[in-house]
Length: 254
Image 1 (cartoon, one colour):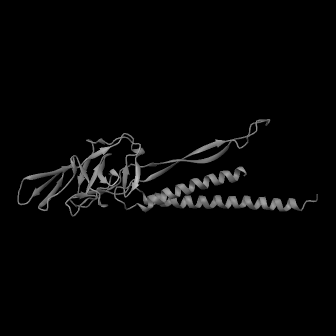
Image 2 (cartoon, helix red, strand yellow; image 1 turned 135 degrees about the horizontal axis):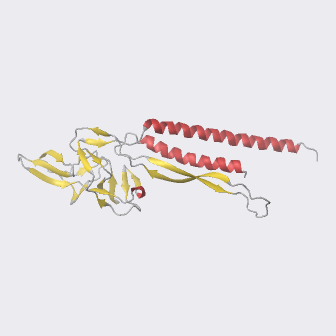
Image 3 (cartoon, rainbow, N blue to C red; image 1 turned 120 degrees about the horizontal axis):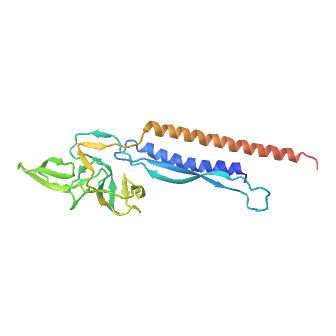
């Protein structure tokens, strides 16, 4: 296969992958606490020739290599909801939740209370405190979540604060190794053990919105689509050129 076709196909393969990443970002514009993914590409140089008896070395051909994707952990904008169960995290920490597969980690602070009185995420996963799931009593009122994650309530007719737990905030030495598991959750993957985070703070009555820039992502989607179309047209032109050359060669007298 000729170099032009190989280069064009390598670029189309990376564009397809990049479009998947951008499309997933766009689909999560309104997902609370969502962190966008970014594509990382690099130039891959090699010579297509495999013989070593040329007078001069062949020029290396530049291909496009889809190296990896990485997480953009930039903070998203905060939105005030005035819901006492909503929390936004100022810092690099994650909330810890209990899932069927073990501990999961999220930045989605849109919390609620389930029928068992447990503090849970929008997906129904229990939010973990330093001593396990956080459970409220039916008579609890005036829920207060301090900046350090400590949760207190007024119980029944009492006027003295009762402690219900403390949000477990954790961070990772290498958050890029966290694995997205769907449902706005991460697993530790190869990122190492979760470490207690005492530097981050929570704000009650706020949520962190997605950090996806809708205008930028839509512009990227249009750019990727146009580039893919242009490469397809180039490859088609090359194919037509080869077909014309073969037809003309066939008419040459022996």
